Length: 200
Length: 200
View 1 (cartoon, rainbow over the protein chains, first blue to last red):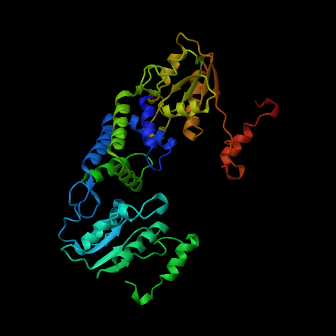
View 2 (tube, rainbow over the protein chains, first blue to last red):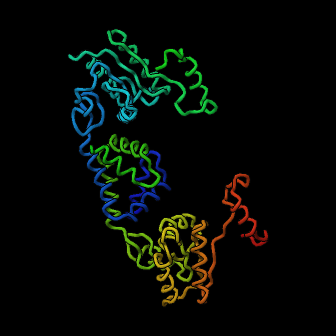
């Protein structure tokens, strides 16, 4: 295989990158000055070598504990449980959450053989029975079938503890259009309707 | 910047890769075994270090002359002129062309300051006046405004030579739907209509 075909093949292994996109990216990289391609290659190697899971929350980080777990200004009494590290970034960008996180590392998926033992559920329970008290666990698994099942499992496991368990709201996305929303989302939005005086 | 942010930033510089896709790719790479990320990093460095322009046709290659220019079974009397190296791959995949190529390295674009001198036009003329005779030049620049202007320039420059100059056909794409085709394409398809007895 030529060096070009090799690069196309490697890029095409990335999720959402088909053969045509891989070719376009390859020719783009080959037309750039060599430093640009080298910077990308180095960033990939560096990230893979330096990034590991935070020993506390499980998020991918190059400092252990991660910047959020190490930040004394973050409220350690509220823990937001998410499926993946990427979800931490999404919530951080929203800029409204000042607590800590717990990354499960996936979602329950019996069809794919992913049971509770494959997720960082034990680590969550250990965290809740640890020295620093947790008041509330916000379950922010995805609003998908598997995310809901995972949320239900967590709810059951946490029932015996004194911690408050909440679930992020599901409803119509901001900027969305009712006309194009799917039926399940509209049904959820109706079920979860709030009195307008409650809105913040 | 953390190693994660660094990788997201580098990936987001690629064409067609926004910040969200860059993040998705980053987390994908971080979840893979280290070898997978290293293979990609190495493929990028290798390709950039080893790939250069073919001295004959100008296509990106890691052998000079490239495999097509070096192949004695390819018909050297027919030269297909394309804008970019990637176009060579597209025509090769169609599997119907057995001649050689000439890569211009772009298209005329006065607004971007790209004139004939920035393209490999002189190299094409030199090739035509070289020792191996060329019968036909097929102009396969893109069916875009700039591609058409580039084709017209080549046609004018080649008028003084004895070589036959042809242009790839424009028309409705196979598998396309007349109802959804744009007006310019339909107009071209009508203009370029052929007697059905001519069809191969």
